[in-house]
Amino acid sequence: MTINWTPPEGTRITYPRRGLDDKDFNFKRGSDVQALWREYGWTPPSEARPPMPEVRHATP
Image (cartoon, rainbow, N blue to C red; front, side):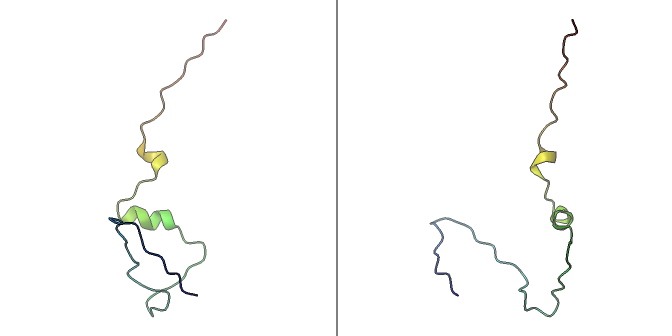
């Protein structure tokens, strides 16, 4: 099945460096994808935002 899709003008496309048929590709079930992304400087949005201020509730 071939998908004939043209990206919108100005869209940057990044293709994987290795394909699934590459002899160096080693599939590991349950691998930690976020750990791999962190090696390249990625930070999850939940960690990148500033911490929530502490809410103090009044006691009656």
